[in-house]
Length: 178
Image (cartoon, rainbow, N blue to C red; front, side, top):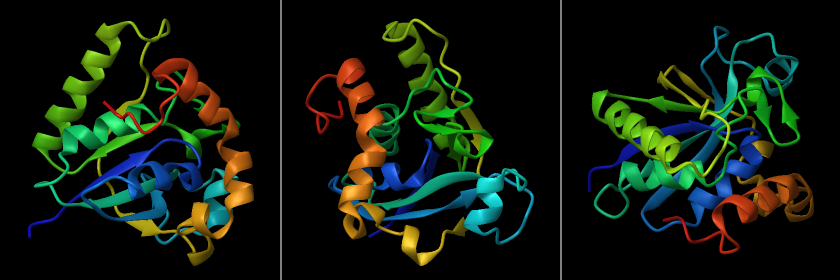
């Protein structure tokens, strides 16, 4: 089996794990930090906004089961692609929406998907999610990993604004990713 990875930032990583983690072909989803200039940052450093990092998820997947294009589609359904200043209740550069691409093929797929989303006119504001080259990915502290399973009540509270947005823009069935 040949595995691949994808890295997405879309606000608080607590809310970005579950939608991918429950999808067939996903091997693991890890919370972490990427895109900044400080090696091995802590949560407190990233939260303070001084490292240049954004909270992100690194997804290890089996491309024979789920394609990178499928993952990008799932990603769009989790974020507000018109908000460059954070996501939902999470504000600041460390919560900005970014698709971090590992190679030219991922870039081609992400850019084509972004173009399709913009042309769909699903959103009246411009699509501002950036597509950037992948940077070193630093795992977040253990208590952040699989947060939705460890702290379901807190996860539900954090997810509420995102859930309402998803229902308004993508329909009531959150699991309908396509």
